[in-house]
Image 1 (cartoon, each protein chain N blue to C red):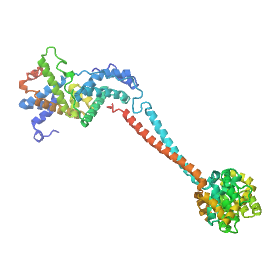
Image 2: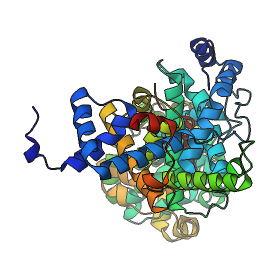
Image 3: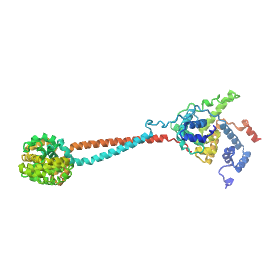
Amino acid sequence: MQAAADEPGLVRRAQRGDVGAFNQLVLCYQQLAYNVAYRLLGDSDAAADVTQDAFTSAYQAIRGFRGGSFRAWLLRIVSNGCYDYLRSRQRHPTASLDALSDEEESPTAFRDPGETPEDAALRHELLAHIQQGLLTLPVDQRVAVVLYDVQGLSYEEIAEVTRASLGTVKSRLSRGRAHLRAFLVRSGELPPARFRPKSGLEQLESG
Amino acid sequence: MRLPFVLRPTSGCERARGLLSEYLNGGLSAPDREWLVAHLASCAACREELESLRLTVRLLHDLPRVPAPRSFLVAAPEPRPAGLLPALGVGALGRATAAAGALFAVMLAASVALQGPVPATSRYAAPAEAPAVTAPAPAALVQATPQPASAGESPATAPAALSAARPAATAAPAAAPARPADTAKPNEAPRPGEAPKPTAAPAAAPRQPAPTAPTEAPKAVLPASTPTPAPSQPARQPAPAPAAAAQPTQPTQPADVEPKAAAPASPAGATAVGPPAADQANAAAQTADSQSKAERAAARAPEPTEKGVGVAQVPTSPETGEPDKRMLAGEAARTVGPTAAEEPGSSTGPPTREFRPLGAGFSDLASGLRGAALALGAAAGLLALATGAVWLKERRRRTPRSGGS
């Protein structure tokens, strides 16, 4: 998601009630917002609802935006919506039939042309495990891992989104990664190094 | 200050695990990085963990971007997002709350205002209007009854007196006509209807001074004092007026014009006891009546006197006692009693309650209005609370939980 060419200008116009300007911002960030929600919730429908509500709320509250990173401000609204959704689901648990089995991550989706059906199935299973592992993390750690490792935000932006200190962000990320690694190891998705082919980087490092 | 390694709570591997994530991010300080590299070189377990962690991070980085199922464009700006009362909007709710609150305050003030006047009117002013109603006559008759209490009846009489006064005046007419016959009989007063009522009670006491008058007279006198004020406060002094009427002695005070004139004349012509009583009655009537009425009465002073005579009959009745009582009894059921009469000074107070007949109408009306005002006020209060709650809820709902800037 590339920021709009004139993001500050679009924000100012949106603050004056220009929906068109705001919708340009929506087009810029809707993929990012939806993916963050999806990784945090593991449910495409819930993620879509939360994302829509987040954009609506953002439009209504954009006059209160005082500058800074619009992306961080928007993602904070999205993450707050996810927190609310998760809390409500805790109070009223319902079985999600499509969680971890979304079509978006079906074996045929994003299939490498040279990938065999078997490889595609294994990859899909791995992706499902990773998403499941993410959902086992505490929400704070999940947010840090998703924003840093999946979405590529900086520490500073994550600190702004979560309103936490940099140290806290680093700590949450470190613990989140460690938990996820342990989860994948237990699930057999991470075979011992000796049984794994070395990646190019590892070969360089070891060499 | 770095603590000696031996004092560290974690072993070398534990410390290394804490640095692995940041090592992968390239954010370790040079000393930590050097230490970790040295540790990894000698610890296979930590190396294995580093590799699995690196793979985990790579998998996370490689997670495919999930395409959004739909566009999340915001719909055309709705000036007022739909809410509980979209048609009205928050502003309307706020205004409704304010309006309901104001209505509540007005109703409250109205009820209080009505409450104040009511008692006063029932006591004094009531007669003015009450007499017209009807009750007065009966009351007067009742008082006419020669009971010692008659003086006490004065309160009740007050109305009657008023009515009597009015007969001449106006309002009383209704009541007057009804009983004229009764009172008229004894009375010499040319106008039976009027004479009977008015004087009835008051007159009775005074005129028959001979018989019962004494007893009542005193009381009457006291009331007389009240009458004086009555004139000044016509509207409210009706009650006292009756008392005044009862007082034969002070005709002058009661009716500014009538009493005086009548008093002299009436006594003479009234023969019986009527005149004075009549005067008093008139006076009372005047006092009772509003100033305007009083004036009218004054103008008709002469008549009243005669009527007063008729009233005197009432006393007569007291003398006779029995006949009047019948009549009185019939209608008198209302007349409370001579309580007020007993206490001249207090006459005003007690009469008020005994005014039942006269005041009743007005007080009922007033109480009805008051009740309605209170009911409306309560409804407005509830409405204010309800709309206020909705307004707050609506407002809260519209304030999104933003991430802040």
